[in-house]
Amino acid sequence: MDISFSPHGGPQAAERKFLRSPFQFFLNNGYSIFSPNFRGSTGYGLAFGKMVEGDWGYGPRLDNVSGLEWLINNRYAEKGNILLMGEAMVATWPYYFAVPMRIISKL
View 1 (cartoon, helix red, strand yellow):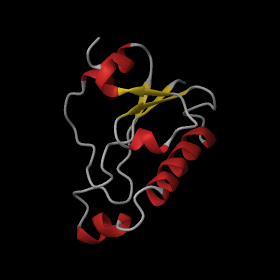
View 2 (cartoon, one colour; view 1 turned 60 degrees about the vertical axis):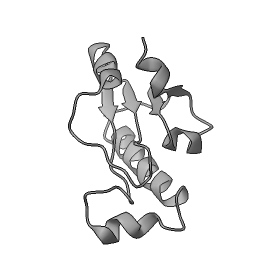
View 3 (cartoon, helix red, strand yellow; view 1 turned 45 degrees about the vertical axis):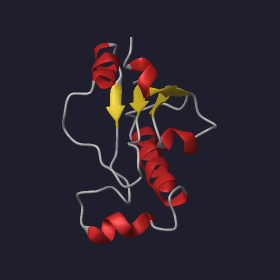
View 4 (cartoon, one colour; view 1 turned 90 degrees about the vertical axis):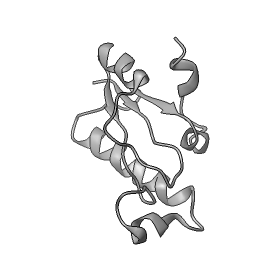
């Protein structure tokens, strides 16, 4: 299965249920969406949000990698078939193929 991995910006932000044009585009083209709320995401209490203070890249990246590994180990995703897209957090993943979300949303 092809997965679109989209970490939200921030890291002190959150993914919420609302219409996202890029997500609709990929869903309509056979992709599943993985957009986790990793440590530091808002809406889970002050302590959870403060988990990234002084650690704005490493901790959230570990959370995302753990999620991706779970998807792969449970056969929801395959290595090599994961598309990375997003905005701010994508800059911390330079060794993956990235699609800037602002460009996709203008299609």
